[in-house]
View (cartoon, rainbow, N blue to C red):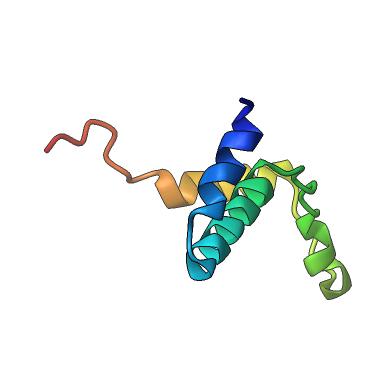
Amino acid sequence: MTIEEQVLEKLRDLPPEKQKEVLDFVGLLKEKNGQKLPRRSLLGLWADLNIHLTEKDIAEARREMWGNFPRDFKL
């Protein structure tokens, strides 16, 4: 007996409301295993605001934000 046949056999023994739960769960599994869409560029969010960020600007902001962060932090 195949896995599909085993699942169908057990599914048929369940009441309709539990069958619906199984269907919902299978939908979640399919969605989770599905093909992921590529991420969209964030540049479009501020394209009309005339904001131009460079790698240098980002590196400087990181240094400012993390510059005083303790490196050897121990609990």
